[in-house]
Amino acid sequence: MNDENELNHEPENPDTPNGDHRGNGKIARLPKNIRDQVCSLIRDGVSYADIRSRFQELGNAQFAEITDKNFSNWKTAGYQRWLREQEWRDDMKQTRAEAIECLGSEDDSKLEHVALKTASSGATIRESGAQSDETMNPVTCPKGQ
Image (cartoon, rainbow, N blue to C red; front, side, top):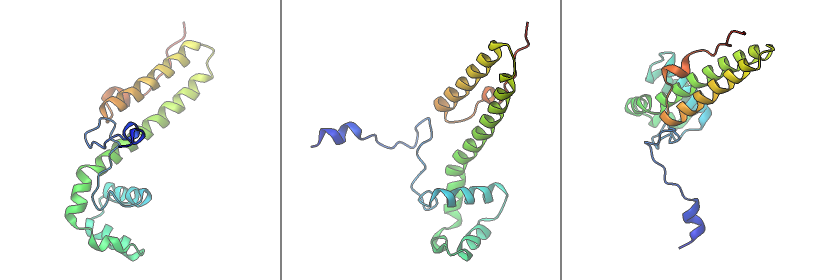
């Protein structure tokens, strides 16, 4: 038995709070850029049959074997993780824009407030694997004295 392999091995657990496990279904095994496109189409309300035919027309033969049940399974798990990731990205873009706005201020407490809010948002996401209502609130610069 190799001790080095034991030390480096971390079993995959689909219930991990950070949501790192993407699954092992047919859609989960597709390349990330294809999964992202599938998720975008699901979000836009495109039917599973239309998604399947679009990708087949583009030369993705593996979509011939992807059933409505595969899409449904993906929608209840992988797609939900993708949505949370998109919300997190949008929230971080907003937080960044607000931080840049606060940087123009001469009040250092404003920057500290933004930094604490950003760190809190990241910790909440890592702990829960999802957005909380608190992390979705925009960061606002505190009023100067």
